[in-house]
Amino acid sequence: MLLSLVVHTYSLRYWFPAVVMLGTAPAYVLSWGACRVLTAVLPSRLYRRMDDHLYNIYQSLVLFFFENYTGVEIVIYGEVPKNKENVVYLSNHQCTADWIIADMLAIRQKALGHVRYVLKDGLKWLPLYGWYFSQHGGVYVKRRAKFDEKAMKKKLSSQTVLGTPMYLVIFPEGTRYNPELKKMISDSQAFATKEGLAALDHVLTPRMKASHVAIETMRDHLDAVYDITVVYEGTLGKSSDRQPAPTMPEFLCKESPRVHIHFERVDMKEIPQESVFFRGWLHKRFEIKDQMLTTFYESEDPDKKGKFPGEGQRSHLSITKTLPSLLFLGGLTLPMLLTESGRKLYVRTWVYGTLLGWLWVNVSP
Image 1 (tube, rainbow, N blue to C red):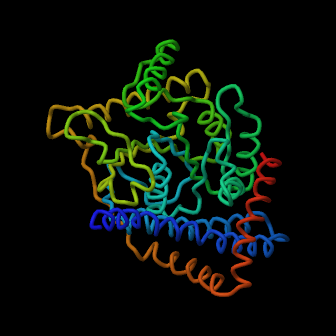
Image 2 (image 1 turned 120 degrees about the vertical axis):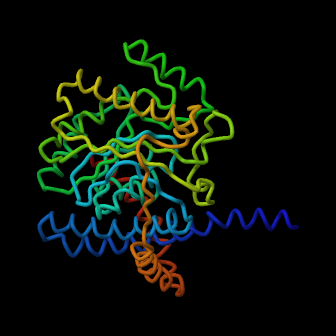
Image 3 (image 1 turned 60 degrees about the vertical axis):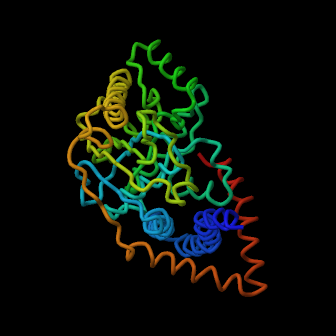
């Protein structure tokens, strides 16, 4: 009985946040729909501002759980600019929680509403979220030969013309690094060797197409590229063997007490425009990541192991930046669930919002 209680208590750590985050989605979508109708005859830029504001509210709710609720300690190496910038965010990729790390940095620049993603094409089928990420400015891409460069350029160009604030998150590896998937790592290393590039141990060989298209399409609109390297402290075992990064449920269960984030701002003039040179530049950035991660996990020097180069600064997110969003969306959701008509509207929003969203993402770029 005691074991059962422990198991149930553990599961509640992520079930409660999951229920709230998913449960408030219909109220959020209805709020967005109302704003969309109200701004239909107004300039597109005004709609974009309202959409960014709403997105900031929802993502602040998400961060309430992933940062304030978990009590995770964020340690940042490098100086994050205090002012908002138009940027492409390039990071190593190891778990689903990586998306939240981008939010954690963006909210510290008051740019959370401007976060947009380059996503795997299959994610467009996510109920409600799939189409919303797309209309918010996200780009769905297919891998390798099926990559639609023209569609990506069109989507990003349309936003630069409008002057849309941009915090575009890209994971150039294309898939998550998992130290237990030895074949995936060896295949990635073999590909690098075949292409005359250095083989990497703690990251996968980066793919350059999406990053290059994004940066070149928006070059005149961008201020910088953010080069981000992330380590979840729970992945550092007692030995030098690296452990898999936490999933979102595991993160919510507080299995990663500390996150190390290495931040480097790269000025646009340092980034080559030609694809062949850009590929070498991008791979070099990942070589540097690989070196830092090798030191983090494998160094025999206790002063270097378990940390990035330089001095890490603990960064605390005030609950005053996230709790109001929880109260706002919760306040919209609860009345819907207390009446029969409200519950019907709630269910219809999930069903029709999902179906219309699937149709929308298949007819839009």
